Amino acid sequence: MKCQAIMNIMEQLAPRRLAEDWDNPGLLVGSPKQDVGKLLVCLDVTEEVVMEAVYNHCDMIISHHPVIFKGMKKLRTDLYQGRLFQKLLINNIAVFSAHTNLDAAVGGVNDVLARAAGLERIRAFDSDSSRPMEETVGRIGYLPEPMTIDEFAAKLKAGLGAEYVRVVRAGDKIIRKVALCSGAGADFISRAAFLGADCYITGDVKYHDAQLARENEIHVIDGGHFPTEFPVVKVLAELISAKAEEAGERLEIICDTASRDVFEVI
Ligand SMILES: [Zn+2]
Image 1: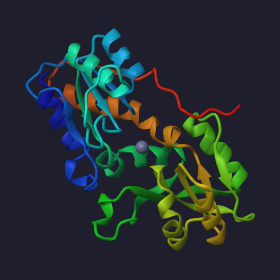
Image 2: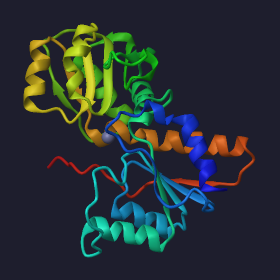
Image 3: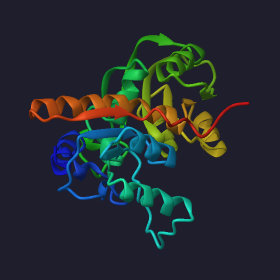
Image 4: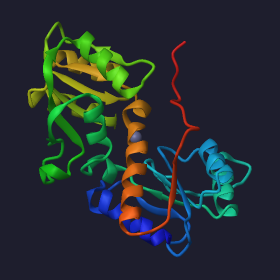
């Protein structure tokens, strides 16, 4: 299968127009013309992930976080980033990234998170009023039955397969309506409260974000950046596989098993 054909599948699954202006999605390493027999799907292109791709004879990596994000000023192979690109190029491995476009896409990172949280009647959460609703990143939905914050936090932790979640408790308010934004979405806490959510799920919550949540009387569950996004890896691999099969192409796909959350609790 040509790399270009996989890029076309990715355009269907996570259209580039859904990406934020500051983002850097697309084919970031390699050529659209190269042949791809085996593909690895991951969240981050780390050295461990590249080694896993090399070991498994993969020709391409699809990542959520762009492998090139800010401007690169050097490619020194004695430093981490240079070594990473050296390994990719020596082994002829292409890298395609779908970041905020995959966050916003139907069936993307946030829909996967909403399903892991057990939400129903899921719709887009208008965190950005300059865009049509269906193209925004966050999601809002309802629990099948009302829950306490303790019950819901335990359910979410199990749903994400996370080792822990951090909870900002806004009194003993019962949870019916839940808003969420995977990864680093603490900026939308007030918006979620304004939309009537009883609880907001995201990652990377800071101290003052947590205080703001309490002031707005909304519970917050910080599920962690990695755990709120990693579930998309398996789902994306299945979606690409189904599209390749539909097109009558032969493509082997594996999911990253090398990555772990960078945070641990001692
Ligand atoms: Zn992220």
